[in-house]
Length: 145
Image (cartoon, rainbow, N blue to C red; front, side, top):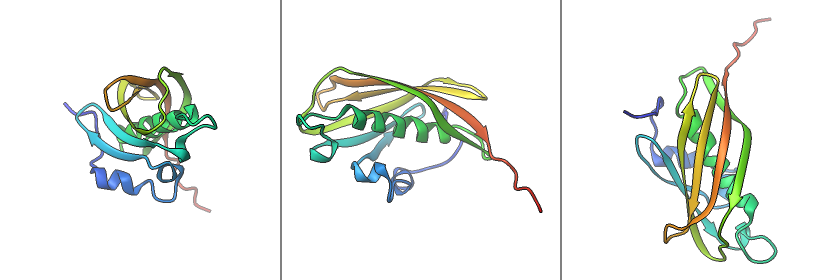
């Protein structure tokens, strides 16, 4: 059974990145199944830190991007999700190529969600693991004047 409550395609997800930090870093949604969402991010000068390695902040951007968008696809219309807390453990240095992040839910509650995001190199070795806590919010109805 799928966790998704909204229909989407990879193309429609990637269109949400136009003119954002996600587009600037070259992050592209690459796959999804009934329980997860994945994206690819290049490891190159725009995602490097000054020593020429993948910047930990870029990994966190990838993790929050995946977890936040996935969370928003798991709620009914009239609700939206925002990040409350994120942590990351950086486990392996990368200097070039790309990384693949995969987000999957740990908890999908009515008011909070928790997502695990694993970021791996092309050989499947863990580069970073992150946990994102999400608040599920209700859109406020417009107040008529």
